[in-house]
Image (cartoon, rainbow, N blue to C red; front, side):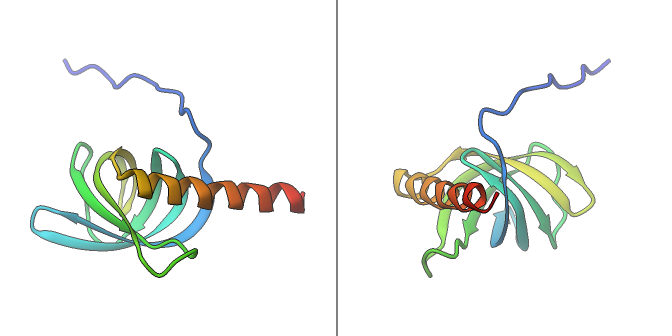
Amino acid sequence: MPHPSKFVIRTYHRIPVRCLLYYMGGEFLGKGTVMNLSRNGFRVLGDHQVVPGMELVVRLSLPDKDEPVEIQRVVVRWVRGLLFGAKVVRMSPDGEDRVGTFLSARLRAYCASS
């Protein structure tokens, strides 16, 4: 009998965003909208079905620059229809810096408006 996956507490808070994302896996290219983002994961509403455990390459468009952030490897953690959550496994240091800077700015803006 399979064991349910262990509950894991996230180490970062996810920040609500709306960013364009392309995801590639095997023989397909999907397009989606990132609904929330953290340094090590995100939630996407996509146009192509994925399954838990699937590995993807992602190009994330952040509004700070025209050039997308390439994430070399993410793993799909859960799926509900076309909505899915993914964990970042490998991203370049430059990509990590851009995502971190973007999230910090969003968090500062949110705190200042509260």
